[in-house]
Length: 270
Image (cartoon, rainbow, N blue to C red; front, side):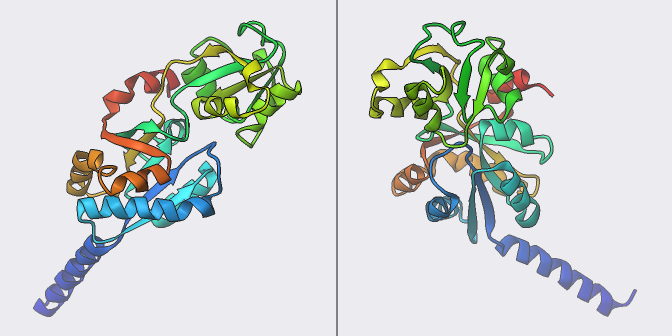
């Protein structure tokens, strides 16, 4: 092997390594069942990710916002992000396929997902809802609902499920009598008082509190970069980062590890 070839090869390796170090760090946000469009949310996500990049001295950063798993999976394949912030159900379903490593969690979310409720205008107990129409925009993931949310309290086939796409439609159906009960999250419950007749709708069952959203690292994130981000994650929403976090529905972030998710991982199963 000639000396010239070795020098060229070494130069190519160094150039590739330098390019990798200077490439923008990708952060993907997947928030399911949220209000608003990805187009409207995208600028806020970009600002949030820019704050994270500044805190961690990344050479640059690119944030992407999605509301569906299919769209997010396409972006994961094409852009190979280093980090992600996922709704809990999406994280549980995608964690093994993409080898997602928990590094943090959303401590307080403005967009729901910490707790789930069955509400009704006519029934007074969960048993009173069974065999009747249950409206929800969360029943698109039966495994998550039955194993992690319900924990044996109910199965979806206990009801006639009315599957919705819009978050507040289920509550409106309960108010109009189009559905007997609704499965909603904490953000939707907070909106109930703003709806006409909302005071007539009562909680007949509630889940245990759950992690709302999970901060994960993809395998492509360098170990040193990942470690630093995990150690500084709690500072992302401090100071001038507070507004940026709130714009994407996050009040606070904190460091976490897989053991913090042991309960939901066990419930969800393999």
